[in-house]
Length: 498
Image (cartoon, rainbow, N blue to C red):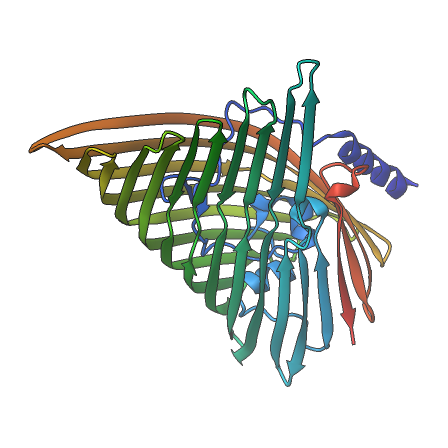
């Protein structure tokens, strides 16, 4: 009865707390993202990114690497073995809120070694909608508008891993992960006015799609000492992106036709690395475990592309005006990512375990771009050319402090309930500047724009999950996410021994 009462108290607390409720001053975006590389947000691939199990997500994202977890530890450092005595199949179906992530893999023991193979599919949920509007008036005006948007981001790939003990005190492992990325973002807007006196026909097409490939190699080792384990890992990440930035507008009326367009085809190549060290301490009575983590990541990237704009106006009188800009774009940038923290695990009894952690993450992101081109104005009488250059730069600096706290309750031999909440504080500063230089009639005109934003964010989030398991068959993990009654956040993973 005491165990049941304690369980009900935990469930009531976690269900009552609405993790969507948070206090913040200004939302801080992803510090790996930049807004000056393209005309919309572009996110640099992260060498720190890794799979987190349903169990770890039920605790809180900030506990990653600081609380021991079989699957999360293996995907972070392949030197960790996944139950080397059994063949198993593992699947993870993400929630609708996570763009329908799907992960399927397995681990095969070979002697004292382990081979892992997995595939992942993210973004199976398609997002495309069309809206139509039509207005009629007694004066005879007939106005129509159609808006279409398509945004189905997709990531799919495969991972291979190999883990092996070197001797009784040393484990080693390596993995290779390949990802194909298709982030489609397209929209179109059509407006028509059929009034005979005010006829107009407008069409606008936008395409901000991004296509790329990512190659990630992890190598790690585990060194076992008395009451201590030293976990060392290195990561190499190489990616190549070809984002499309295109905007076309056509405006027709009774007196003129205007066509405007700009294109920015761009190649972005990144090279990133990560060095990580984790020290785990287990007390002699096995009831206390502490982890200390320190990691440093560095990513550098190059930008090459073109920038072309065209503006043409044709009048019914026969006159035509053209404004053409043709230029090149080059740039580079880097991201420095340093994280440290510690985690604590306390086993109170066979039925109750508590966890707490704290982590501090500092990220510095700098980008510099140089654009050079010619702007030509053409009319029936004159042609004018202006040499132009533009040098945008951006600096993002973020500090992220997280304090996850979690509980696990073991109900018998087959059921586990768990949940966690995470106070979090982020502070960030963004500095943007653009230096313009125009050369015209042997004279140079220069001017500069500067933009500075300082942001602070305080939030509180929570999750709740459960596991049903059997030592001979496997288990099922459930993650209810933010709100137990909202199925958009639910996800499930399955582990089957064969």
